[in-house]
Length: 79
Image 1 (cartoon, rainbow, N blue to C red):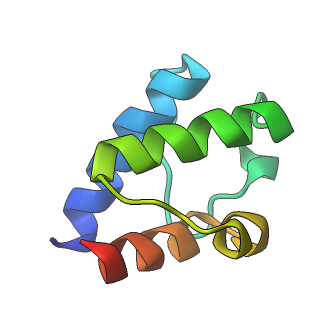
Image 2 (image 1 turned 90 degrees about the vertical axis):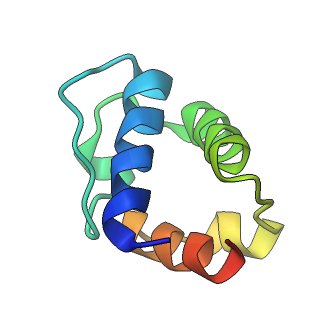
């Protein structure tokens, strides 16, 4: 799976979770870039990403991810 395809699918997940069709994520996107991205929405986002890609993040990955680029790297390593 190519990074472009992953970002395209992540954009759809982020738009759905945050109910905002204007969201476009990139490698450097963090919770500071999306207004409603708080700790509760982070959990919802992780679950939605796991469902979209058929993977499971471990707790260390969830707590140490610094940006969407790191999330993409983990997804690539699992699919």
